[in-house]
Picture 1 (cartoon, rainbow, N blue to C red):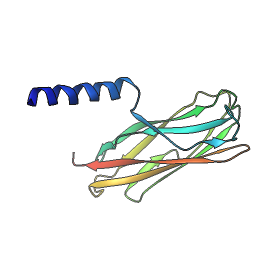
Picture 2: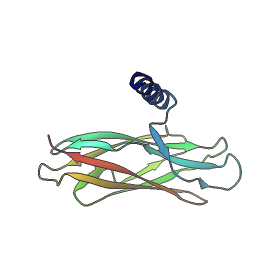
Picture 3: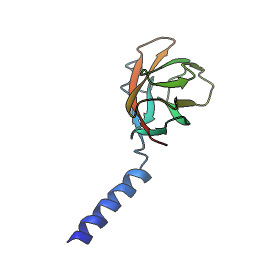
Picture 4: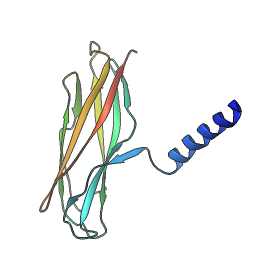
Length: 138
C-alpha cells in the first residue's frame, strides 16, 4: 500500500513538471476582447535563494493571439531581498521572457519574501501577480 501511494505521488509530480505547471499566471490584462489580452507568468513554487547568493528567475508575458502592445513591467521586492531590474519595457516585438536577478544579503533574515510584478500595457487594463522567494542558510 505504501508503495502504491509513493508511486502515485511521484507520477503526479512528474505530470505537474511535464505539463508546465512550474509557472503561475496572473489575471488577464489588456483588452476584454478574446485574444487581445496578456498574463504574467512567474514561478509557481517558492524560489530558494541562499544568504549572499544571486539567483536568476524567469518572468514571462503570455500574450493573446492578437495582443500587439508594449508592456511596462514594474517589479517590487519585500525589504530584505533585492531584485534587478525593477523596471522593464517589453516591446511588442520583443521575446516575452525577462530574466530577473534576485539577491539576498549575507545577513538577510531567513524566511519567505514577496516579489510583486505589475504589467501595464500601452492601452487597456494592467495585470499583476506575486511570487515568493525563500531565503535559506548557505
